[in-house]
Image 1 (cartoon, rainbow, N blue to C red):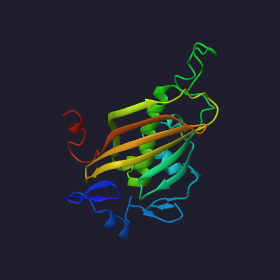
Image 2: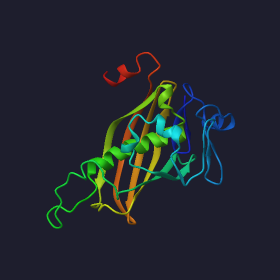
Image 3: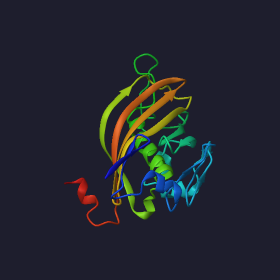
Image 4: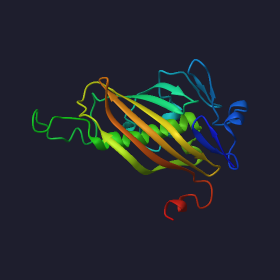
Amino acid sequence: MVIAQGGLLWNDDAALSTEARLASPGPGLGLARPSGHCYFADVKLEPPCAFDEAFLADLPYDPEVLFFDSILAVDLEKQQIRCRMPTDRPLPLTSSQRAHAVRHPQHVAGAVMVHATGMLGFVHAYHLLGLRHHEGWVGYGTHIHRAVFRKLVSPGEPIIATCTAVRSRIGKVRHFVKYEFEFMHEGQLCYESEQSAVWLNTNEAGALAALSS
């Protein structure tokens, strides 16, 4: 049976309903507070805040390619998280550009922003879905349904990036999530997309085989 909650889809044959998740918090289950704080069994998040050591240790990538330096806002009800991405430091591909003021102005490479959506998805999964990589969970992008680069991003001011889960199917072994991403730079929209990902519990037999079937 699939029930709708707050714009999301929850499969209650494979997972607890939203009401049960909030009433009986356990490992990885969050409680939203009117203040905008988010509480889990193993972490208390009070944005704006830097990423803690436990989160950085759990990343499936080296933190140097996380690209974000802080969480600005979190909303469990909206399934939304917002982070700050500095652009005033060396970035892959961007640092390798043969820049020219007219013919090729230096800019944050589009591939960096696409990779950043994956990192933002992990931030979302860790803090809003309670998934932990060291417990076997890993996520992979499956679809970029739509992506639009609205402007060149000159290195300097940070990008303010928002990730919202607009549709989810939550199970015991696999989660399917569709996201909307919105990146703002100097008050202007610079990148927006709709993307999907699958999250797998690799402790379960055959979990990764589903990716190649």
